[in-house]
Structure formats: structure tokens, C-alpha cells
Image (cartoon, rainbow, N blue to C red; front, side, top):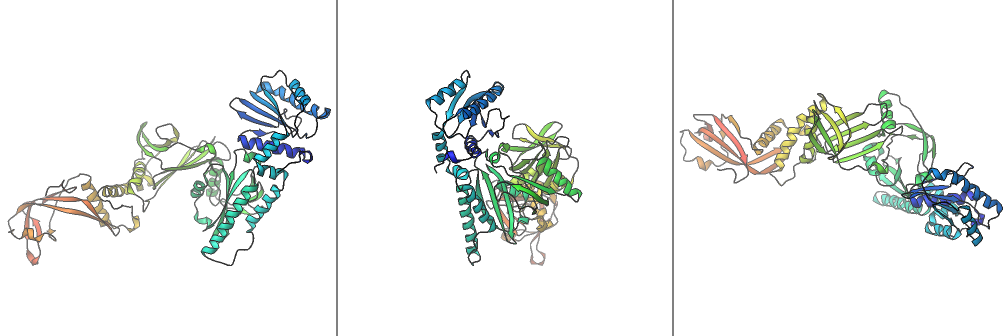
Length: 560
């Protein structure tokens, strides 16, 4: 678009120039014009020093009064320049300089060791052409279009066709996609992603919401229930790190706590940024792009703090430390965290496999660091993924726990553990998971952890016994009778005299209705047996000894 600079208000020209420069650089700040502004409108840090831009609205030939204003700004800037490392000072105005103008500026800025220059109308026209949505926003009707589109997005727009099921869902998604694209065309500061989802917000965990929103540039996500079966998600994503400075999103909320639990949750939210569930708050005021907040008077129910862009952490690990020595280190498989509103405190939740979750609350001045540890059986998970975390938790009593960079420094630690229920439960569960892990080594069928409530005691006992054999243990014991159900032909020539016997059989394991035939055989060595043919059945009974030894191995490793 062509901008008639002569007709535009000075503040609008200054805001456009500042927005363009800051969006392009991604860093810096705009100083609102005043007598105490130090002769600076925009300052941008670089590796070589500060770039200073003094923006003026003058679009016609400079008269004495305009030159005097520029001179005053330059003199105020020179007073503060020795305190900063300056790379350049540039005069920005929608006016091409004459030779006399350039000579005047060179004389005014003579004697400084940094670059000084004049950015005129042609370059500002180039800025407008380079970022048309920004020019349209400030000088066209882009701002009005933006508000109209957002109003359309959040009022539901035109009525949907009288359809249901998948056609209705497709229509809703198509409209959300169209609105997102239209908003992207007119908003110079943010991008928008609008989704209509099936479900209820009550079924979404705070950690899940936080993870799904943790991507570069996102500044806010608003999830709003539309009806019993649908909710809307609006992601607002900054086009530049400076977007939130140029177009800030702010809100004032009145939060109350009626119980000790609610008060504690609020404190964790403010001091550490921990997700706040059931955090009822009334919206007192809200400002920013339409859709970035809830209407005044409405109740917000839950909150999460998005990680800032410097929150990317290297791979982490949980460490069990006993007597000052790292006894066990388990890789963290996923992590999510945020920072508090009230200071430098941080909340970090890590997973050590699908079964172990640890929440760290640390770094808040005047408050003790704390930790919350939880485990579950993780039904359906692979035992190899679950076992390391469970073994660490089971071994915690008498030791301390810390989280740190894998092979590097600790982030939070020194949490001492005595006897506790979580470790006791892990110690009870870990042998079963270890047994399933042993079974997996002998079958190509995927072994998964079953639901604990559905397990039979006899099946668990048989599984644990088989795992002992597969791990190379030889079990010594006694027997009273063994029914012969297979291979009866082998015993046709036997009389009733006692003799030694070695039995080799394939191993089958059954648990929770699932049977695994293993690539392994059991070997039972009876010192002395007698064959009993009573009642037409074949039964092996103790002869001169009732001792038996049992071992296992892969086929070919177990002699017959």
C-alpha cells in the first residue's frame, strides 16, 4: 500500500517504525517520547553495541523548529552515550534529505566515533512493502479487519449447515482453519491457531495441556468449553520475541482459596508456576488481541504457565545418592516445567519411564524446596521401560534424590528419604516387572504389564519362579508326586524299581489370560523316582530320595 506520510499522526509513524525495527530484530525496546527520553525512540542491542533510532514524523522540508527538535534529541542522547557502547545513531523520518540536510546532520553529529545516518521516506516505504500487514495495521483498515475477524471467530460466525456427525465436525474445522488464515493475514504481531475439539476440558490434565502448548513463540493458549461435547482451543503465537512488548497481553484476575489445599495450590502456582487445577478466578480486566482473554466477569478454572524460550534443557537424569556417592542414575524420558509469577522459583516435572513421576519445586526465595513423588503400575507399558524408575524409587529409603543434566550438574536435589509408602509399593511391584522383563528376552511376542487388580496369585507365583530360572538360578527342592501327562511311551519298559530321571520340557507362561511360549526349556533332575501305575495313571513318586533340582536355558543349552 502507498502511505501518505504527510497526513499520518506523528505517534502512529513512530509506532510503525518502532514495531518494524523491533519485529525485525526480535530484541530491543521502544521508549515513549517525552522530554526525558534521552533522545532515543528505539534501542536495539547487537554484539557491536547499541543501535539507536530517533524517529520523527516530519514529512515536509525541515524548518527551523523541526531542526531544533532534532538537535535537542541529539544533545540529550549525547549526554547518555558515554554510559553505553553505541554502534550507530540513525535519524528516521519520512523525508528524503537534501544536500543541505545531510551537511547540517554531519555538522551536528561531528566528532563521535560511531556511525550516524539518515533513514528517509524511500526506506520507510520499503519497510511498508516488506511488511504489508504491519503497514495495513497502522495506516489502513487492518486493525478494523482484525477486530471483526476475531469477533467472528469467537461469536461462532454464520450459522452452520444443518448437519451432524462427521460432516458437522468437518464444517467446524474448515471454518476454524479459514479464520486462522484470515487472522494471520491482518495481525502483524501474532499468528493464530484455532481448533474445535470433541471432548470436555475436565478430562484434560494440566501437564498434557502444558506439553501440547510448549513450542517456540507461543505466548498464550485459551481453552474454552463451547457445549457439553466440544471445546475451542486458541493458540496465540508471537511472530517475533518483541511481539509481546509491542502488543502486550495482560489480565487482572481475582483468585480466592477456601481450603488449605486450595491455598497451597495457589502458592505453588504463584511461586513456582506449577499447573493450577480448580483454580477458580474471576476476570477483572483483560487486554490484548481479541481471543487472548476471557470476558470480564467470567470464571477461569485452571491455569498453566508456558515455559519461556530459554527453558529448553539438555537430557536429564534422576540420581539416587547414598553417602555422597551416586548409586543409581536413571534417564529422564520426558520433562516439562515453568517458572513462578512471584519470583525465580521453578516447577519441573520429570518422568522416569511411564511409571515414575517426580515434581520438583525449587528456587523460590524464603521457601524450602520440595518434591512430590508418585508411581503407578503403568498397565500396557513395556516392562523394560518401567523397571529402571521403579528400582530407583524402591531403593530411596536411606538415600537422597536429585535431578540434573545427564552426566552434568544438578538442577535440584538434596531430598532425603526415609521409609515411605511410595517406595514400599515400588519394592512390591518391581520384582513382577523384572520377571516380565526376563520373559521378554525369550519371546518375540510383545510382553506388556497387565493391570494389577486382574492378576491371580498362582500365576504371579509361577511367573516369578520361571523368571528365577531364566536368570540362571538353579532351584533345589523336594517333590511328592509328578503326573505324567506327555511322553508316556518313554515309561513303558519301566518297572517299579527306583531310578534317576532328567525331564526336559518347553516353558509356557500364562498371565492375565495371555500365554507366552518361550524359546527356553526347563530341566528337572530327580535323584530317585518310582513309577506308580495305580488307577491307570502314570505318576512319579519319590524313590530313595525326594530331592529335585530345576534349571532352565535356551534349546540346545539344556542337555536332555
